[in-house]
Length: 130
Image (cartoon, rainbow, N blue to C red):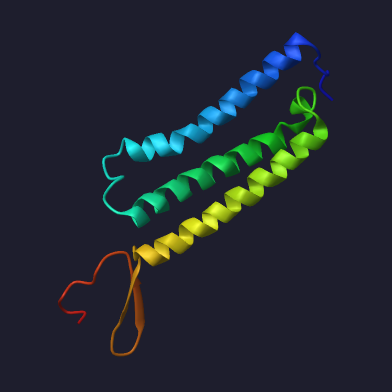
């Protein structure tokens, strides 16, 4: 078990870890905005934002879970437990929303041929698969 921090040291550790987490949450919109394709389509932008936020939140979930013994000395254990559960639930929900947007945007196209269904990542070539 890690040593509990108190006073100014605890406050400095809480502030720095909170700023680090908020900085990680600021990366997805900055990455999408700087890519040059943010304004092309609202669904495309939402799809990318959801995927990056899901990845970020699930990373924060794993980090808070694996470093819980150390973080219990900085934050209250009950608050840390709630934060861990919340980031996992919201991150998973955003991952599901990302997949729904992938299907809605039509990245994977389903085409019916004479005897089977094909799932491709791009439109099929005109010949010989017509």
